[in-house]
Image (cartoon, rainbow, N blue to C red; front, side, top):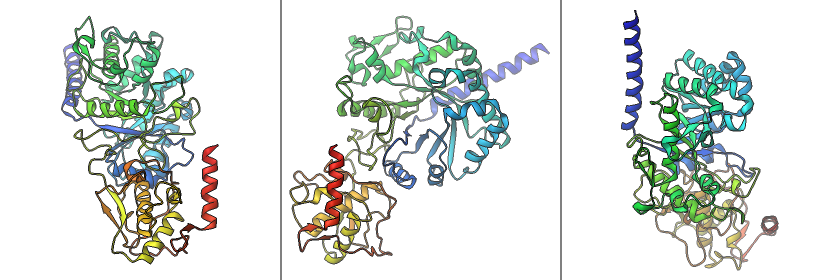
Length: 505
């Protein structure tokens, strides 16, 4: 009997090792987190349009928003949904509550929506320690509901951790989890191992750099190339570390091995760099955010793995898609996004040759402009629609503003068409305008007039669910923008001045 049991244990161990080794043959991917603390949050359809335009195929939601899950249906975008922290206690205490949650938020959406994982809470062990004893129960109850629905092999269950649960993180070989967490961490890791799930980790070299008081070099945090004598060397393993990100991921691997778990892959559920802050955070800049995220994407997609596990995929979700202006806290907390809520990139990432995800660089960029031979009255009507029901901000077209000249209906319409096109994420059908618009790869920006497709900041435009007039519809809109009088209508001017006044406050 004992030899049979030993054989079964050996088979189980081999199966887990094979699963872990298999991840070495899987390509790493880059996804994005989608936060919603945005005063002018785009509609789910607009979010999906942006995801498609940027070829983002993996997203993490911080909840299980029904409208968002419906919008993601039939897109093949892989989705992590979340049990928010405020629902953790109820689910962790009741199997039936967990089953109801799965029925309402998972079963009603699959397979149309490609849900691949459920994140139970977020950084529970560090932000909600009183709920820690119920974390594993919640994970098990959710998993049991998936088993009952025969979805447990398709949808993984895990929970994202702050990297600050790891103590003595450098050198990585000496890292270990906070020992006070062992009563939770050991059964949690056993659950991940038994279900072939992954260890979700939030990795923020920005905070490591900020808290190091100068010990960590900025270049080391930003993935910038280092001379060999500047690389960090683990004195126990002699492994060389060229960036903070790899060191933190390996610290997690070593921390798990300290508890005798050596076959659970790490997935980075959050990583990024803020693009703006007050004077107390001088390194939260556009350039540094651009550098970090561009280098991070290249690093992940190169499938280099980490020094401890070379070639093992470390798939990563960038924090985050949009700047969240409603987030409480410091200025930097509101400025981690890759895009403003209007869909315009906060900065143009340098990703040429790094793959297809997040194509907000200028390579193969497209723009929407008015057709040169289109009927002028139809172009005028489409322009009126864009600046009216289409809710494009036409402020840059006002006299003395960057895009006023040349003062022609075609030039002004081209700016408005392009603004709407990029607001809608360059989705199919958003550059038509009753047949008077066309897509071009030639940047129509000129002088100080920078078109939205170029990542310009002439102005902002309001997100809306309005759909541009197509060849099968009519705008039905009276002229609000007349080039015969070279001025905007009185009502539109008042509205624009109100917006400008609000923006200056």
